Image 1 (cartoon, one colour):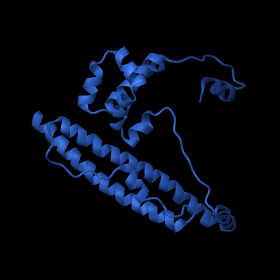
Image 2 (tube, rainbow, N blue to C red):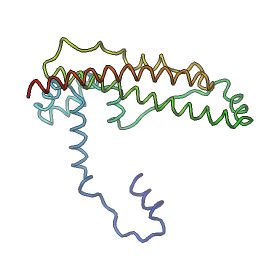
Image 3 (cartoon, rainbow, N blue to C red):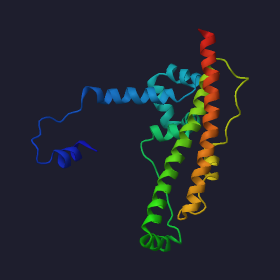
Image 4 (cartoon, one colour):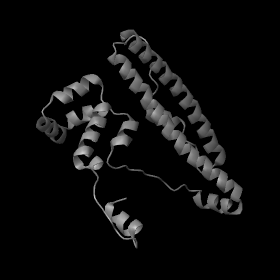
Length: 210
């Protein structure tokens, strides 16, 4: 919520005693935190390249050189894009059977509730898969920074491919959504196994270095 929304809707008829940006949330702190997070999503070699650039040159390249900005964004996972993006676009389409499905749900409240819970679980599992996919490449990158290039599991398919494979054939069908959820759980298990293997490799590299 914006400060105005907090003051007008939450404070409302209470006596306003104070309203300011705390020291832990100043624009300088925001800039530093976002910069750290931005750099943290980049591989080590790219991160060092960016850190060596004068700030004016970096900002100019980001603004005026689409290829430079594009190369940086290639390093960002879907999870990283969602974490740092300043806005998000979602498009949806009303299914042809939407009205018939809602009429059915009005007459069967239990089915309506189960369908809604299944759809919510679908989007939660979808986000879990996005997160696991990011973690796989994060720990793989950390392992590579430790000099490990030749071992490790194969890369998972691109996240867009995985999500498309697990998309329900009919979002209005409880059976289809449940099947999609089961598929997402299987993908999440595979990604977790892959991630854990990279964690093992990375941990072993840290132990050997120390």
